[in-house]
Amino acid sequence: QVLLVESGGGLVQAGGSLRLSCAASGSIFSINDMGWYRQAPGKQRELVASITSGGNLNYQDSVKGRFTISRDNAKNTVYLQMNSLKPEDTAVYYCSADIIRYGRTFGPYWGRGTQVTVSS
Image 1 (cartoon, rainbow, N blue to C red):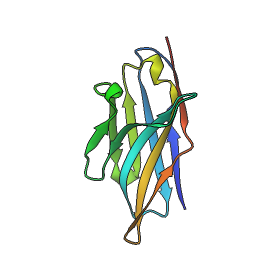
Image 2: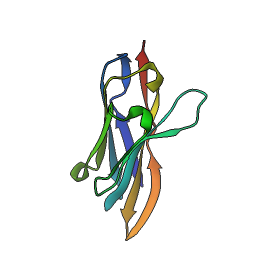
Image 3: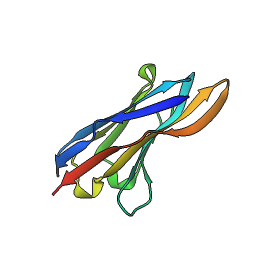
């Protein structure tokens, strides 16, 4: 089994910063793509940022220049540094990971989410 646990969410004023972390544990040989998604009330879940095992990055246009995704492969952990936060960034943030074991890729696996609330 694989478990993803997010942390770092909370309440922050507009213009503030938060750093999200997501640690993967369990039956893991290595991790391929990792990503952060978010879902606001009444909206569909959307990709915020992703990072491949080789370090290639992808960002949603609305967060470019404000958010930075990174990963620590030794710790099976992905991070999301969020700066200049806006009220429209308010959502539940989920991490995802494609896990490699036995020579095959499984997933994506999802965390349970962490709430980010940005007040105006």
